Length: 374
Ligand code: APR
Ligand code: ZN
Image 1: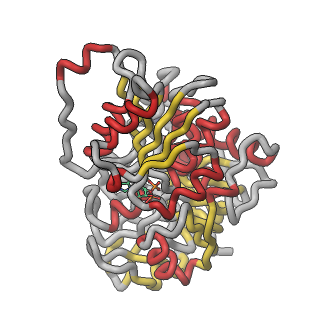
Image 2: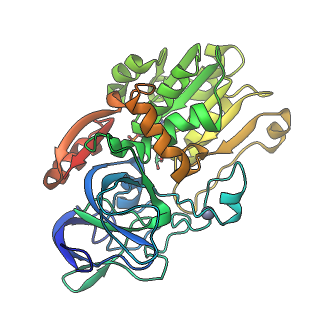
């Protein structure tokens, strides 16, 4: 029985921005009040982890990256009532405290107790549960899933169905709610509509599945890596565009292809330029532009101000605007009932100790999602 004891295990540490991950022996403290210690079973590698590792979003180093995790509860701290040891769970970057102004509002999901924007890298009491070689190691968005064991706040843990396949379901923690949810829940893409998706990586591919499921008639996919096109077409993209091969700005090409601009534009890259391109791809009167990529810290958008009056909508969405602890378990159940097929989103699976190979495949643009298995 490990409960109440420090666990020594393997974790991947980023000692600094732009330095390769290093597999180390770490000590994981027991969960404090309101916290849960989880034995990870799988973790995705998401575009946000890449932003973190490249130093594009402001975080504190050294840290244990990773946020898209699935695992089994090992032990719980004092007062924890919603999960118990042995439960299957997901780690969720945007918690649901059920008490703050976001959580209490019917449409709000960006819980005030989140640790993404801005990030402290620490648990809610201002301390860390990880040490390595005597040094304190920061948490990543209060998730940290590139480790055999992690500690997270109870409000960031979603308890899922006992039947869930733990080698795959980690993508339900971020990729699926963020992408699929942006289309079917945040935006409610309408049947017969035209859509464009900037970025055909993991998140963009999940958007495609959502647009297709909503009955969109035309789904345009934009990516600078043409290797992403065959898989995107298999998911339902009708037209693929590589902006680097065009003689005109990509947004002009999208407007030309659709006559007037699309009904729905999604940005799943995380760059101001593609956000502006998505905005300008929309129908000027009724188009909806949905930003789901995380832009670099201290970056700004430059929009033509007079163009805003025409009626277009720009909206951001984290995790599909879902009330995370309430709604994400339902998505898992829908997957188990074959109502959503997430399997094509996972193109690679590797054991956790091959994380370097997984990062190489990600950096080479070869994967939709590579899932690490523990
Ligand atoms: N135009 C179009 N596509 C681009 C561009 C560009 N200028 N630059 C990069 N891309 C493509 C990449 O080739 C890749 O296919 O965007 C895709 C990004 O996909 P992933 O790296 O798999 O990242 P993903 O997990 O999908 O996350 C995308 O969503 O949640 C956010 O923070 C996350 O900002 C990130 C975004
Ligand atoms: Zn809240």
